[in-house]
Length: 397
Ligand code: URA
Image (cartoon, rainbow, N blue to C red; front, side, top):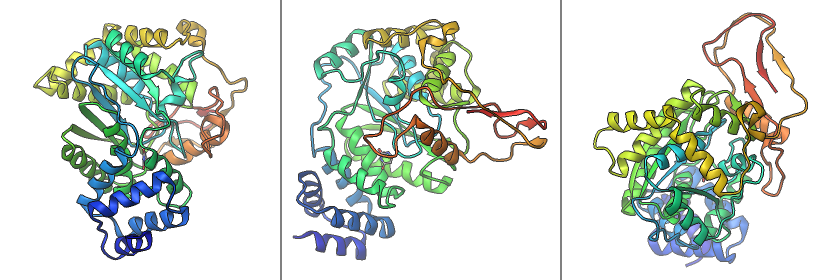
């Protein structure tokens, strides 16, 4: 077997057997296949696709290319959530404490942002002092103590995906359903949770620009999960405009905290409650979705989720101040309002454009080793459907 045959077979048939997938994945993680052949293979998948079996085998093989998190020392049914990537998507910061406040353990391993989409780790790191690098023992102990912990993906978790994703990012091969599905699910399988809720974004700020594609991606990921004996549920959610109003790391932490304080934007509250309710249902706390939704709504209203968020920050050495001190988060020294040149209604928002602009301001990275400025970002004053007068503020950069 050699890599050229694998590229040709993929290009001509969109299918590979288990041995061929293992050969490919081992070659990617061990560095024995040159980048140009990996990139050519990714492009073959981009155009030809990959059948369901090969996609599942790719996810499983990548999951086993490095360490698999053993969460067996955490008591109870462990749930995880994952978003396929969006702009202003701070739901994880609301969902983790909601689910943990219900007594369901959340041992969350998250990534950093890449491209125009933000990453949860970068958002938590905007909180002064917050530590995202706990060793496994401390991570497990914290989940057993307070039901919630968040760490960044360690060096040897799914090394094959790390390498493949970096190459896809620079070869125009990111938005391929089998490649995205296997990339995300390999990480979820290696992260060791029993149940997973997937938030599949659809719209101009998402990798999947239309509903059909998003549905296909969701079905592919759910079937990979079921093939690996995991409970998996997928939700499709709107990414035709940023979620909430804030885009940028510290701004998003402040918006998540406002939400936990009962003052969040409606779309963020609704999606967070929805995802959290599915997580409680997977964990067997409720048979009925409506009952699960009411349960998490109560945890939000009562302040229990906010309290859980604060506990988690304290355990991970973060320092949060009060709301009137902007929680002690970094603030941009210059704030620039963008005014409307005409009156009318907001018909559409270039969501990816906003993600890219905020990234270029310094909230994200073009390369993995770029540093981030947590204070920069944008607050949208107007969203789709809103009326605007001439001279009104559309957004503050
Ligand atoms: N997120 C991932 O982890 N992988 C992809 O391929 C796309 C989004």
